[in-house]
Amino acid sequence: MRGLFLFVGLLLSLCLAGPSLAAIPQPVRIDAGLVAGAPGGDPSVVAFKGIPYAAPPVGDLRWRPPAAPAPWSGVRKTDSFGAMCPRPGTEPANMMNEDCLTLNVWTGAASATERRPVIVWIHVFLTGSSNEIDGEGLAKKGVVVVSLNYRMGPFGFLAMPELSQESGHNSSGNYGMLDQIAALKWVQNNIAAFGGDPKRVTIAGSASQRGSSISYLTMSPMAKGLFQGAISESQFPIPAALDPPRRGPLPYALKTAEAVGARYMASRGVKTLAELRALPTDKLLEGPEAGGPAAAGSNVRIVYQPVVDGWLVPMHYNEPSAGGAHLDTAFVVGNDANEGGARTEGQLAQARNQGPDPFGRTEPKLTLAAYTDWARQRFGDRFDQFIKLYPAANDDEAAHQNTAIIQDYARTASYLWAAGWTKASSKPLFTYYWDHPAPGRGGFIGGAGHGSEIAYAFNNLGADKAFTDQDHKIADIMSSYWANIAKTGNPNGPGLPVWPALDPKSATVMELGEHFAPMPTASPERVEFWRWFYAANQGG
Image 1 (spheres, one colour):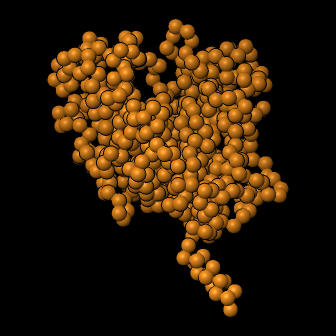
Image 2 (image 1 turned 135 degrees about the vertical axis):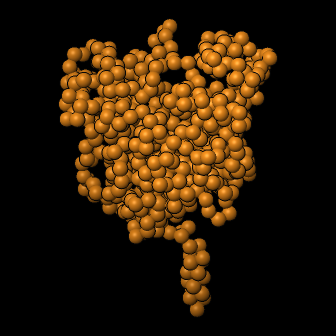
Image 3 (image 1 turned 90 degrees about the vertical axis):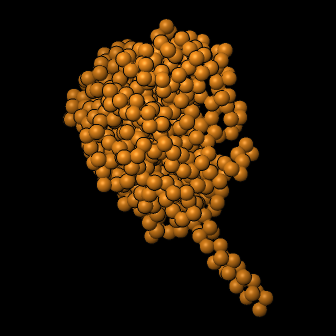
């Protein structure tokens, strides 16, 4: 009898524990074979890491569309991340390998019959990899999380006349984007086996170099039907109109990209595409032509990112907002408070005596003279109007106004861009402004920097003691918003501060972080000034 009571007690405890003790049965069958993952910190979540979604793009497959992975027999162990894709940078060479087209899945589903919404994370063009996020925190909120690697640098975005000719559609330079589309097709074909819903897929990522994969995918006809929602985090490219033209217009048009590719081939010391494909990986990453640091005495370097080829990428990422040439998806777009030269008080204190000028010039610090000179050049006949809106009488005031300018324009330009987007969309669009300074790395001096909201959105603060109870509360709210976006296309839900959809008639944005409430993008007078500037610069 005592044994019976123990058994009943155990059964009751399992029932009360609910899904936290459930985990998807393994192995899981996908189109290429069987895979077995490993439990996360919460055993109800299983992580499958390093799953190949395409064949290694090496040898003759370099600079070609991704091919299907070879099937395998038996059970493939998927408990560790795949190699990073090679690109110019500081990562150790032994961490990078061209055999890198893998993805990861975190699922808390108890069976393959569940249909949980899916978030697919895509890292930035210039750095990062599929292992930069931990999907367990979001998976515990009922979302299946996927992250992926794709080709980068010259491996992912090299255009050349020879490559365009052999393509069959007269384009080249978007191999990294083709990888992303191949991964999204993999999700359509396989995510149900992990308890995911292929009809509720949201793509998410952060911006870099004035654009993000999310921006390009939402306007690519080749991505149609592969996702229903999109989240573009830390979308700072919009305020780039404020920058001096140091690198020229981005993204490159196909002919410009092909000219860059021809220069790249010449720099490798080879004359044919076959010879270029035969070079070892490290030889393809040497020098500024590979996308590395600028040559000595120059601030110009090659930037590898998607190419406007008229096929996969039909236009510049700002154009769909005005022309309506984009996929009809629910969309979330946001900016961060301290990026692009917008500085915290601590950063301003550091920069008073030294440090780079936020306008990209050569002065050791931002001075009133430099501020006034920049404004006269940038705003011309509107200088008097500008200086009334952002007056400065000394160096410190000029530095503070620099931050106000960038923040006001970032919020207002995001609103104007989003208002244009909604004209041809049946789905809601939500904008945000993240302003919570993350602790660590020297305290709060970095402020709410580029991408600092990502760990909060993924509820991935871990056990780091630098994070306070407030940080964890913010992460709980942020990740609930993100989970709801994946579930319904709308961040709102029970117990959460109301996040209104964008109203094209109201210049407001949702503040996330320090507070959770709508806020004006800027004062009415400043909004009108930036409305003029935004239109004059075609959105920046």
